[in-house]
Length: 169
Image 1 (spheres, rainbow, N blue to C red):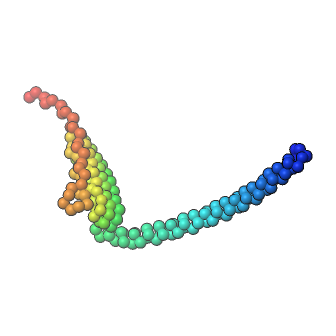
Image 2 (image 1 turned 120 degrees about the horizontal axis):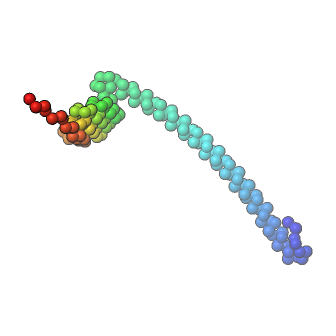
Image 3 (image 1 turned 120 degrees about the vertical axis):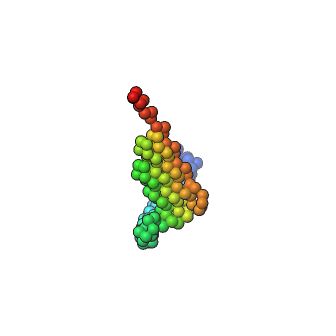
């Protein structure tokens, strides 16, 4: 850095600030290099973590399917998992034996009751009963996880429409 004035004080101040500027540039370069190394190491760690999680999730799902598939075939309900919601007017599916919520009952058509909610597993909530169609009753809620305790209640059906008047005889 060249001094504006040629006196000794200006030259000394310019030399001091020049030395500080060079030291700052060196420190900034080291910080940038450290940041670059850190972000590369972090990205590599993330890649390894994601790969390990994916491998474990696949293995875990395979083990769960190995146990759940025969249970579903023998008992008609999974070991772990939520029940499916019922089609219109149909009951909801039961939740898993150990863990799972019952599926919700399907809504009924005109004059038809709503489907019952599916029962819960050991841990879970019973499914909601389906709404009844016009003039139909709402479905019964599925049983909750504690034996003997009912689950959620069904919605009430809508009021039926008025019929035609009778003809004179």
